[in-house]
Image 1: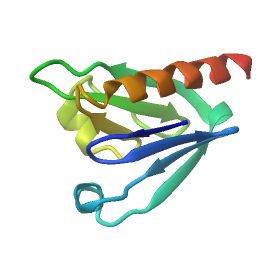
Image 2 (image 1 turned 180 degrees about the horizontal axis):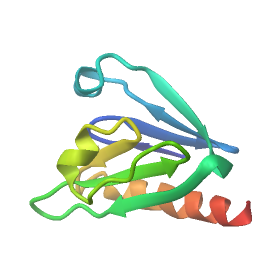
Image 3 (image 1 turned 90 degrees about the vertical axis):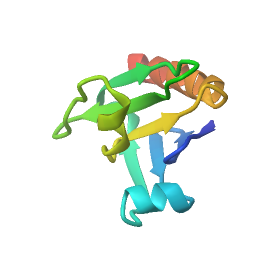
Image 4 (image 1 turned 135 degrees about the horizontal axis):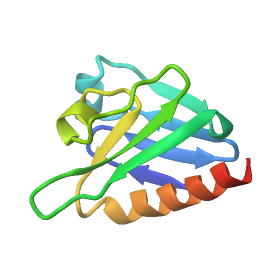
Amino acid sequence: MKASGINGQLELSGDLLLIKREGILAKAAFFGKGEKAVKVDALSSVEFKKAGWLSRGFIHFVFSGSKTLDGNVDAASKNENAVIFSKKQQIDFEALHGELLQRMSRQ
């Protein structure tokens, strides 16, 4: 399962969540950092904020040693464990979020 956002892409494959930074905006925002793999069972929570007509949404992954966000898109744009998305991209992120929560509950 995949979702492509403004500053990154997500791929849920088996027990791994891949956070990718492909494209000019994503690479510029995170100084060329490539891909990060996180085991689903290592996640302690997932923060999800829906996009509005005038605002972007985000999904943020929390695991041991990472920081939570204060709930705003600006903080998410600077966090390597978050991906920002638009209203048009939201459906893919909602599907991935739902599937991820199911997999986390089975662990």
